[in-house]
Amino acid sequence: MVALTVVGCSRSAKSHFNRGNAFLEKGDQASAVLEFRSAIEKDPKFAPARLKLAEIYVQQGNGARRARRVRPGRGPDAERR
Image (cartoon, rainbow, N blue to C red; front, top):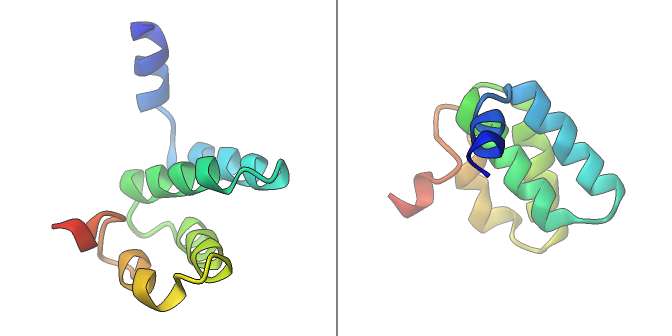
């Protein structure tokens, strides 16, 4: 279990982004959101992950409220701080 955690932590922003896209293809938005947020944590300026995250929030009807969370220069959890 510890080995899996270490491997998960070493993923790049691009890797999280690719995993997020794979989850979206399977219809798993919740897991995709987690991966896109992880990508943004790894690289706050990684625009493709911010765009996909924003698209999901809009589809869920949370676009305006959640838009603050995906602006460049802010982490994905900025709203909670």
